[in-house]
Amino acid sequence: MCQEKESTLIHYHVSPMDLKGHLFEVTLTIDTPAAQQRLWLPNWIPGSYLIRDFSKHIIGLYAERGKESVGVDQQSKNEWVLDTDDSGTAVTVHYQVYAWDLSVRAAYLDQQQGFFNNTSLCLAVAGQEQQPVTLSVSAPDERPDWKLATGMPRKSGSAHGFGAFEAENYDALIDYPFLLGELSIEEFIAHGIKHSLVLSGRHYADMSRITSDLARICEHQIKLFGEAPFTSYTFLTMVVGDGFGGLEHRNSTALLCSRKSLISKAQHALTDDYQTFLSLCCHEYFHSWNVKTLKPKAFLPYQLDRESYTEQLWFYEGMTSYFDDYITHAAGIIDADRYLKVLGNTLARVERGVGQYQQSVTESSFLAWTKFYQQNENAPNSIVSYYAKGALIGLCLDLTLRLQTDHQLTLAQVMKDLWHTYGKTAVGTADDTVVEFLKQYAGVDVSDFLQQALYGKESLPVESLLQNFGVTTRRFVPADDNSSNGKAVEKPASVNLGARYKGNANGLELLSVYHDENAYHAGLSAGDRIIAIDNIQATDSNINTLLSRFVPGDTVTVHAFRRDELLTLKLTFAQPKATSYHLSVQKPEHLNGWLRWA
Image: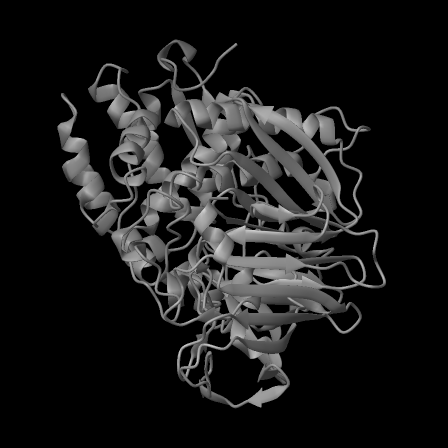
């Protein structure tokens, strides 16, 4: 570290003090506090667009100067003022943080593992956010054998041991998550850069195979952009029985995955769950360029006390969602048929329901803070995912660019050019940057397409564009209401409910009711629990058999509970909609390099 950073003015110490009580103890020392020094904690974490109020987990905050108590006045939910004078004498702040959020966004601690983002643990010192900081982490007394993994530059301690770390400012500090526990660690090299896969939690992972596949994904991405915005990279992964999530950081990603997602040595064929894990890793890694360095101007800098609105999440999450599966294919890990099945899943996800006809992807981006991140049971009827429809926009844009330039220009090249122009230079993008940037390429005219795709509320021309590349799309009625996807259907349902449900021995709990479909017209609502159809008990185990007895036009009596009141309703079955999509290559000679073909 450079010499001037030896005079660090702000020091944090984090201790996992109570594993059973899920408490971290944090000590913040400010060498030169201001008079009436203000402290604050972020209300959200970059990459996850929801006000989470991390400060609600702080317990017992107090301050002292030497052995003398310093007054603390809480100003708001996430702000405190220390009763300090202007003498410049160091002050120390003590507090605990309750950590019981097993996700990638906050902090977690128990007897098996610990994880934290510094947005949850480290109070910012107002007016000194640009000062260099140090952070030291100590091992829990009862688990001295634990290891530690992070991308934060180390100041002291052995590799994967506890010790001290340093960051150039508060913005950097909160971009380095930490993982603690009995860690499994395997390093690999991609494009000459050291990478690490770190797993916590019980697992049976074939780490050599996983790191080999990750190396191919990482190599492909670094070659795509021409260089990496980091000198090392760490995949910090919490393994659980059932879970999924990822959050990007400047030289690492925090991941949550189920045990079955990590392929074992006993498994030889690539599984769907493992493919999903690799796409998740690919997605978060791609964010190293697309949102960590290339980002909206509205995020320069992040305003962590309040929402930061942007119309551009369709680009930053949507393009990343297109490339996460595409690169997994382009890197040679999944074949064309597997890739097209995943693409069919995305198409089904967007087309099921009427949400895309109610909301544009720019509106979805802008309202991520409320409508997307706080989805309710009516979401399929009212919103569209900027992830999923954004990915389809990426697909359409990639195919259109290839067609208009005789396959000389690809979306990957555009992403590289955008990153070098607006990301590497830290300029940031405005709402119209992408549309205007594409006008520089000879033979390219996509302005009208993007105008309609971004601000319109209609289906995208996915099927017609795929036909130009020899890919045929067939629509199927799915096997049941919960099965709209990208698979060919062997036994389509003869009728359906027109609702997503969760079944058990006590009936079918409706999760969402699709507008203008059978359950809607019958008067059923999300939250209702169907107990009988045509006077026959309805359960998770018999619903498909029960519905197979009917044909479109039949009317049945449905008994359901709404809260504790019994409803008796009439439901008439209409012809079920074809909401599954099967994509297949019929003319491989037309692929023209878009897909790999043996």
